[in-house]
Amino acid sequence: MAAAMTDAGLARLAERIKGWSRELGFQQAGIADVDLSVDEKLFHRWLAEGRHGEMEYMERHGSRRSRPAELAPGTTRVISARMDYLPGASAEPRQVLEDPRLGYVSRYALGRDYHRLMRKRLQALADRIAADAGPFGYRVFTDSAPVLEKPLARNAGLGWIGKHTNLIHTAAGSWFFLGEIYTDLPLPTDRAVEDRCGTCSACIEVCPTGAITGPYRLDARRCISYLTIELRGSIPVELRPLMGNRIYGCDDCQLVCPWNRYAALTREAGFLPRHNLDAPELLEMFRWSEADFLRYTNGSAIRRIGHACWLRNVAVALGNAPYDPLIVKALRERRENPSPLVREHVAWALEQQARKRVSETGCREEGGHASRGT
Image (cartoon, rainbow, N blue to C red; front, side):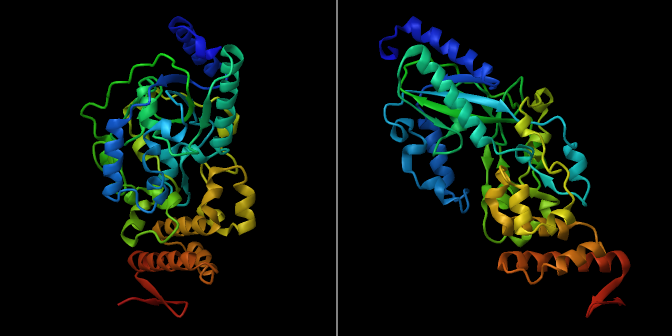
């Protein structure tokens, strides 16, 4: 039946789809065509410059990422939907960033992993479409396949891509997840949103590691989100001091964006903080055994980095903290960790603590005993 619908019928279906998306917990849905030719050129230039770092999967799929019909044959439209994730019942982000005893976890990862929830809701939306319009071709994606989701969401009217490369909506800011339904339904498309960043450069100026190298240009190799989540090896030594207490992701560019004054708090209980991850104590996180890590991150996006990378990240934050004998004690207890990655970052953190001890007290440690520096 869907294949035989008139233009007027397809227009009515598009409006119903947007209504159903809101009923299912999405804040907005829109419809885009599949022409991403301009974005494809920009994406391939980004890859050619090596700005994706060790994320080899970015170049693994050829043109399927930027040509939806190659990923899902028959696709002519993309239904893009967004869902707010900023939790209201959580510690104030800036206060956490300013407290070196605490670790900062990106707000998107405080609760349960969004992938399963979003995918289930998108599937429910596809089921409603089929029940109303009859069988149709589709595939559902939530960061689960090679998809240029931000350009598609922009073309679907969900926002514009800001200078920090995140999607921004005038009435909702940028604290939201995206998901897609690739479909063969020839639905009417929405209008792309005009860029509203203007002359603002707050996100560029605030980036701790200078990862936003210019408007709309992100070098993932310097991005703290990449360093703490995607990178599985050693964090470059020159970037470690710039990471502060950020142990999983980074939100600085979103925290300063003036459009986020309009951001709405999430209605999803699953996105609310668990296990005090909105303001976790670094020493407590560093004491987690692998069993603790797996238990506390069950159902969380954090679990994907593994225990060794978790300890690596926390060790860097402890090294960046002011000198504290308790930190030194905790680090020493991890010096013989089975993971070379952990041992390397623990050694670095101990060096930082030793230097701070000298600068703060004029003492250095020799053989485990304090002595007066000269």
